[in-house]
Length: 280
Image 1: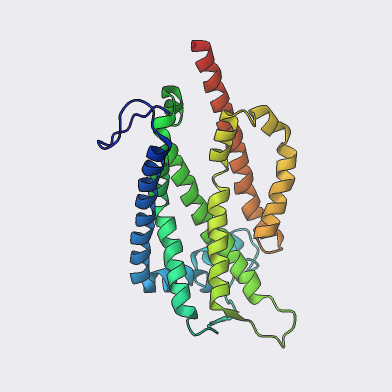
Image 2: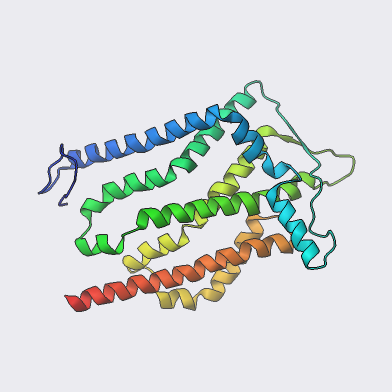
């Protein structure tokens, strides 16, 4: 693989050996992991903000999402149908080191989310020298768009999916004789899983970009399977949200929007490839 690296300690031209590739990869990984560690330390120190304000926010009836739902309910004349005024469960810790362990794990997850753009940047720096000039041109902005979609997904998971799930699961009872006392680790695991999963799902247009580049999918095939995508998206929305129609609709439309964006991205990649072939 020919290299065009800015680093002075690496050859600028010619082929690199397998061990040289491993050395380059090692330093990219070191920098990426170091960024996670630095932001994890920051998150560990900012314990009050991370836990009380962010992670425990969906447990507060005054949370932004609940207030907006109540406003929508009033605007459309639904009285207080969508209003959430109480989330009747309490968090408990049943392990001696439970709170400390949770603090560490949450800090690492927060460090990963905050440093995600830099991780993508390091990944791009490793891949870029192996691409042809035309491939680099069409991949311009990949770091920005990948990071943006992930952040949007995280925000969507935090403000939409997580609070709806917390409200439903935290207040659901099989009997009035059973009181919900949620384990601390269970609560934070649910929040983290929903938020990270949402961030990954929002990378769908980027995935379609690469699948189109290697010829696995085309815009026509994506349009052909649109009805299947609708069914699959409804199933996915039902899995990651509480079993009520309003929650599923709130999740369904953004996911379908991502699918339509993926079709446009795939069409753009195909046109670009055809134009390159015509120029040749």
